[in-house]
Length: 454
Image (cartoon, rainbow, N blue to C red; front, side, top):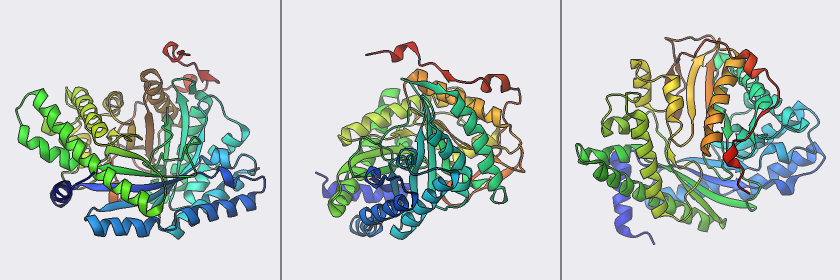
């Protein structure tokens, strides 16, 4: 049980250290909506979401008032639409119509974002999967809340390079269609290797097909809390440092556990997971990069960065699993560039590069995240970057992801402003040497030998 002392301690972290619950996310299964008629499917989807999530916003407001815990986002994750729409969708326009339905439903219930315009294609693409991927640019351009994700590889299946190549082309098309807004729609698209089934964080959220009709997931974030706690152990040994991170992560996760249990009870929907992710915001001090500096680095990207991040990520997870029996999703440390003022500072100082960020993703929570690159970057180059990140996930048996933003009309030295939680970002240089012949090979990179465990 969570006691009054913990609630008071939580309130101090909220007031002084930017602690918040990043999201309450309702995962909703749309399998019961499936039909071969596109109009009927859209009606079923709209009715299911607006019924199950009708009290989402109301519940979040009640919890905020009762406990004084800010809940930044209300979100919905649905069954991958590549599965739900496979019988009814006969054209790209059909898939776009589903995206618009998701957007209307999210608006109706007061959800900030809705994830699940997704396909799982690690082993191969059906004609319907390919159609969904090709519909993504129009789907994201014509909606405000819809987020899309594609799982391109896994440790068991290898990497679907045909889908990797297609996603490079698709991302550039998304960038071009939103070029009048600094290619902002690219923020709503992410590609994965080893995507988790149950994940409340956008843009990669979807409701796994192994889940029930509905589930409550909570994402909690506290980089500012961790950084503040580490001020008290400056110069201490690694053992002392690790204990401080663990105990702080424990306290932060308990906040998520409290909110999840209350939301589950109020909505009469089973509790799924708490995702403890150190997901930063542009607010000063609410930065993963600043934690790395507090550990002893001049800038994120300095020698020792990967080791410091590995330590941080591991201790966060150890503290989290002691606080809740159901920690999952993408728990750990995120290293997005645009959303983290410390990372922005490091990029502007030249301390961190795309290649260093790639190395850091071997030990962090996800991967290359919210990185603005020149709009002139070739589709094959983007696909090559994606393939590298997918390989890290496949070989290391971990989730990796890529969310790049090719900003049309901007180049290295420019800055792009996204606003709100998304912050701003310097345009980072990309290796200009060609990988065309590699990316244009057809087929799949095989799964590694250690995947054979049956």
